[in-house]
Image (tube, rainbow, N blue to C red; front, side, top):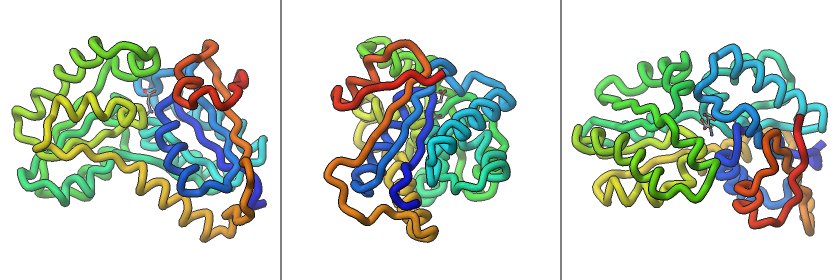
Length: 259
Ligand code: DGL
């Protein structure tokens, strides 16, 4: 079973940021990635819709023998991962805003969180934020419109206008940590850093999630130890023929249609 692929899904190219971390940490693993652009953005959908989409994507990956599934999306994780774990036998790895490390490192005791509406209104986010950070104030901001621009690509100016609208109030409020609570946002980390400057630490947890994926594979004896000359990476897209995903993967892989 160790040669079976690791499955990933996200509403588009955001989860590729996590896919890259995991495939560089675990270079022998075969993978299958779903870019579910047809349903993008997940963050605007109801919990019921996010559950249904997450179940549909997971079933597709399990039908293709995935040995573990990485929910490469904060919105799908915070809304649906417990349901997925109850429904399917394979292990699931999720990603959620890294508020705990940010809170621990905050000197001003003010932490900004930029995420989707779906993440910020989820029960899991509510629980994690109330459990872990009694003495820290969270300034949660919903990044409306960012995902669409990131998926479209080539929208530097519009992106900067929106980013300033969301980030400047948090900067003025005195945050010293900014949590990127969406896997799309590391793709625009440079623009974010340009706006927030040196004094604010920009936090994402892709490295920690990659390590956790490795740990869970090891624990389940599922690590692919045979060195593969070229592991098999398979990409599916449910939306329009997509240049942004091809670009981000440097045109190295064929993208298959996902219905
Ligand atoms: N990458 C997804 C996340 O981490 C984007 C969600 C969306 O499509 O709104 O939340």
